[in-house]
Length: 332
Image (cartoon, rainbow, N blue to C red; front, side):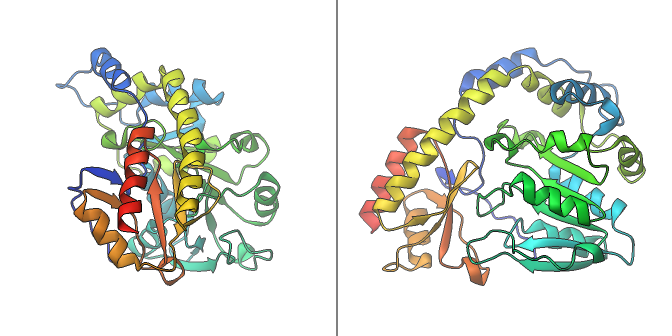
């Protein structure tokens, strides 16, 4: 898999699903509270942040691992729990980095296509044949969640289930409580999305204590720097501000979805801070994308054949969303 990292020089960035509704006060409060020692090495395993996350989720600190972004968590899970000759299973279209983790760690992959509506297939044949299965829920790029009953049925059959919940805060699903019942479950979350802190690169995994011990054997020490840990710790005390932005995002998401539908787009239901939409038949994706870039707006397009006539749009604040719709009307 070829990975490229284009510079994002547009004025309005609706392509990376950052939280665009958090107020400046949130960031100013965090900056004002920062307190860390630049002279000293950080905690090798981010012990203070682990303890705070444990309190936040009602878990033991031994059930938490903290790493340099959720990508690092997923990569280390692949390295740790998929044997050298083993196989990782995942569905597609989904988070495109899963195939990168497989190739990077020299593992094998089983890719299972989602149904035409981007839901899990009714029958899944590979579960007993893989070391682990990754499930992105809510899924990126569809925005759809896997319901609890379906997850339980997969947990009953698979050796290890890893639920990638990068957008979990936008969903009402409670999968964390399943950790009490299943010792083959890992949940991965991040501070990059709902918490609005993509710049600090902090992700974490919630898992049985014995699995966290195995994980730490493969994780680089000092992987999260002191400033990032301090920022994440401060953010956890501001859940009310974050939840307010989540509520506003959900409200705006539904309003934006209706407006896009009025313009001929076909938005999918979403449990995230973005909308996946099938484009109107009367305009080419390449033309739409370029017209928006020319006007300082960037959205996400895809090369994957099943998504080549779709776009993914991050939900912004009302003013930005209204401007985006206005520009779309001009283009269409």
